[in-house]
Length: 417
Image (cartoon, rainbow, N blue to C red; front, side):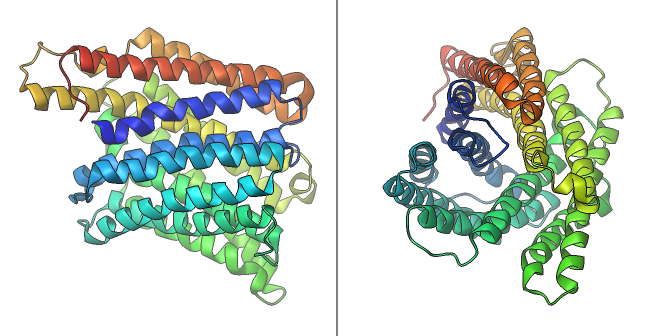
């Protein structure tokens, strides 16, 4: 229980830090490389998303892939601690511009992700074949590229000229981190958790078999496009970017269609988080297609910020929220049942681990934060502080709700070790 839970309970505090930076930092978020915007972005992508996703992979690999990670408690410590410290140091480095802080952050994050990648890579190599395992393998490959480029970028910002083309490396780092690691892992996990937790039919077989390898191939094609001769470079870039947008939109539409056919029609806030995520991914794909084919859109100053808000805040944070509200209550219930050999009715069920009104309150705060973040792209000075406050409130509610599940688990005799 303690292995994934430490990641899940730590993550909301980084989301809270991102909100406070946007609310009180005083520079304009999203419209340029402002220190607070860069610090807040990495607080969300590393401190919240990567924190939850690494914990989820450690928890899911034994169940879904049939492999046992070696020394799970030691692995959790060796990943969680440097990941948290490295993220905090990187945030401070962006905020202050201190070169030494970039170097320290690079070392800590290299240690965290290096440990995680080696352990999970060995496990995935031994794992039983399956659609979710395939998605995890492709996400793992994308994470390798993301981490290597991220460390080189941090060292370059720290004063070591390691990259001949910083801008191209930065774009590839962001592309593999978001459309690779985040999207591919969400897709792979969705094949398992959407039918199981949301009581829907399975995803179509052709989509489960083909989507993640095609998306990874498109990412590679986009990465090598600048090295190709003209006009093949431009054609490859346009085709791969359009393909990535269409693939993401296809996954979103397939998920929404399955959710419309779910067998249990009762209201479910976790389903609402997923729907917001899928709608945001659709909007992100439409904006990306417009930017690819319409020069005025792609060259607009707000274009990358809008893509980032829709993908990171709208899609990724929404879906991860929805996953947390299923995974944490399930783990608490499962471990209570296993540890106490409990009979039905003697321990709380999954729905009782976190009160429904509390999750609904956080969902409303998240929606408000997302709407205000979109407004902040176009009117940053007016909307950014309010967006930051709403994001902080959402993160605070999420933390309280997850801690409530952990307290309920302990109160009924559960052991974390």
